[in-house]
Image 1 (cartoon, helix red, strand yellow):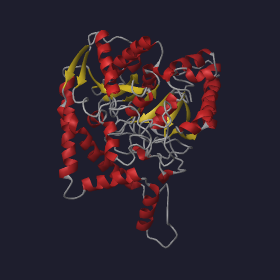
Image 2 (cartoon, one colour):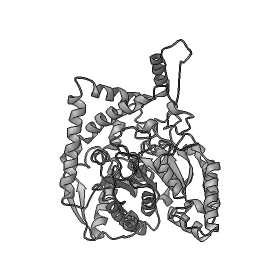
Image 3 (cartoon, helix red, strand yellow):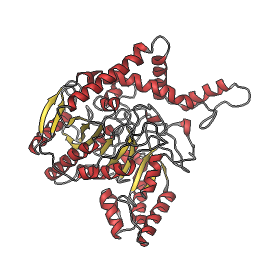
Image 4 (tube, one colour):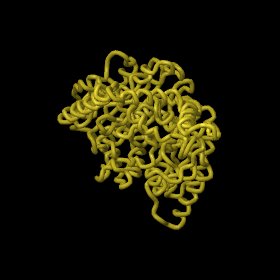
Length: 497
């Protein structure tokens, strides 16, 4: 039974479809694993064992009746606690929503259920998705399964840690400035930020509406592609949803051929601040791409150096607007409502008690940037930089099929190391932010271990909007070549929990 937790999602689905194992056995194996290790990892905020087993029984019933099964029927999944789930808590890692039970499912949640995916529970995250380390959760930090004293990335560290700890073969994250890709990089897993608007945001609790994007997290590129196809597609409930066919990402993941592709190495994503071992593994992967038949060229995107300050004006500005809804009047936490205080006083007391330091920091920064007299100087200027970044991408993609870079400048840092230095924390998103500002597609996949600390390094692949299939074509080819070179997958080198 313990071997079931090592199966890929594709292998799990096949085993269930052929009757090798039951969906209930698979779900129970993962629930047992969560029970055994999650006290150390803290990847889950809520485990829905009863719901997971009920969903698994439905899959077994379908198979027994000979009904058709979806490609991921019966496969367990860990869902980031920022998507609404009818009947089970959605907290966004915040005391502000502690105990809140949504009355409806997010579109993504509903699509997972329609695909007969078994949702194990909700994963830990930086509060309202604001952070780069999952240390900002009101419910305690998540540990990196490679070294529990280190961060698993943020804000979706719970989802990535659940994969690396073999608590689930699939997970869902959200990526506002790198919060799918960065956790993937530092935990040795695969994370994909689809094109903005490719996956519905209906029922995703908003942090920064023009940047937030849900996406798949997995242990292999093919598994991520299967999950991508299950959750993507137009949604009339989301005004930013793209009404276009989903790219053939599963087919692309299976191609294993990049001969003739032009791949651009982003010049600006190297140099001071990048860990030597990260650059060593990245440069080795660049050579591997050449060996696999791709043409590799250097590409300059000068506006990318302005992405970090632009992002930390745009994202806080949008968060200060979005989080205004948490006013103690309609749902969530309410503090000080003893009949002697005004509504304004209750709102102030509730926000003081309910929001953590990082959320307050970003609300204050965003409110300042949007205030009269500063709007044009800060928010307006940041939006102009966003346009320049999009133009740099357009120019680059006129000459190459995809761009590549390290996903993060360093490997996982120790928990607490950057807690008192917000600027150092924000630099973890240096390579990932431009894709969010431009709205195009990006992936992180493992490309080895840094020799100085034996921790995972991520390769980032960036594709034009609605060319998500290119990510999977390159990613699947690199993954297969690296696994052949190593003789195993990277996660097989992870220390046992």
